[in-house]
Length: 303
Image (cartoon, rainbow, N blue to C red; front, side, top):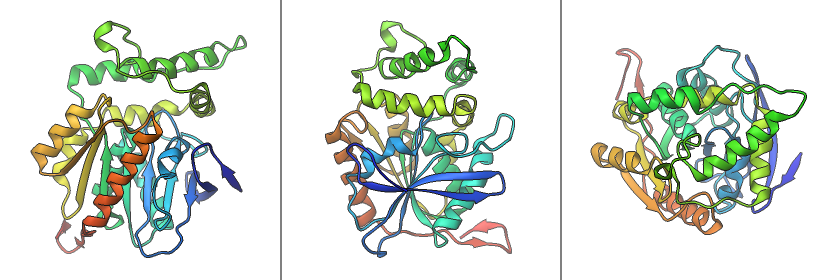
């Protein structure tokens, strides 16, 4: 099936059958196979669909694979109570191994960044290079607050109040961080997206109403910045938009870890921002070497 999405190239929707169920992804084929594919993981609570506008700005000589995380979009949930990032990446490793047996470059935004990093730690042979947009480890007080309120349990009712909740939830996520704290000091420097974009994201959350929160909670509890130090032989680009609530933590992680860092004016809410983001990622991929980590199985370590 071929789907055309606004401001995005023609993308094929595909599924993979795994032990836990089916995984859905958007496949944007390359004109040739000279460059390693770029596998992209979306932020919560959305799906790979939200990355299609960004994907439209990459050159056609790189295959792009936009994965719906388990329990999001059209991918089946894991079937695990309160899954961790490690639970998710065990399945994502199967996805990458199936679609790119020789490994791939990995991109992730927010929750997707936690998943990409976790996957590189879990299966370093599959991760050539990492591009992490908005990576954080929350301080305990904020982490606990987010775990309690950021992704609540929402159930359908006969009056349709869950539909109104989802719309307001997504709207407020643009306006405040955290979305549930409407004080002036929590106001984000953003406007609202178009009604069409908000509707598209609304559909994603409604579709995954009973499972959207699983990847969110896994990422909130994941100490991503601390985990960066465990990478061996994998180059990392950290980037953030100027309005990203995780910008400061991401920049600090890059400085402390000696990783490349790019800060952009905007990366999600404008077409020019997405174009600049794609260009920065492609420049970095073209200028760096994919130093694939090799596991020394006799010692259980990386070399």
